[in-house]
Image (cartoon, rainbow, N blue to C red; front, side):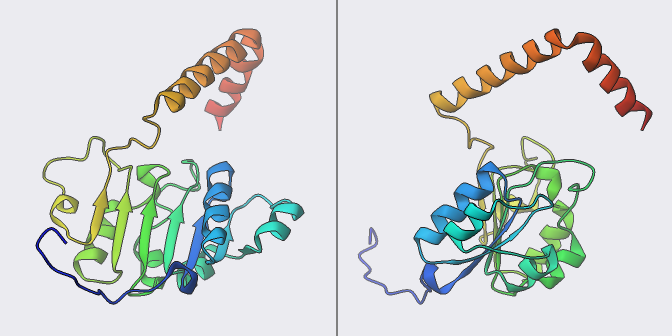
Length: 196
């Protein structure tokens, strides 16, 4: 429009697309609700069983990670980072995705094997990606992601509002108080965790 053009770009409506949500926790559930509002078909994957009322309200189809990756037009990663989710998305998983699919990561950077994704984007195995988190933060200035037209980048600022920061501070204080209250129990749990 600023260039004086009135172009009608070929596109699809969200109601014609399938969203795959990997990690259907608090954030994942909110993403599902918003996608449903736009008429999207939604697939979900999570190791935790979903409440029956949530399944009934949203119509989400819970399925395997592989099925989500194979069928979704957009894949949204919303899982926590732990030993089972480190590089949850790497070459074998990306190979399952549609050529026109877009991968969205707003969870934690190491959930994606970034070099594998960069190769897939360069080879046009998938259409694009959107990130707010990275394996190394801040994103290194020599990252190939910075020069890619099929990538949207954010600077890990999904919680940058004043209200979000207040919640971060409250959670930090709450966690600190929990540790201080349970001092011996927390120390015992840390010792058990380290022994594993």
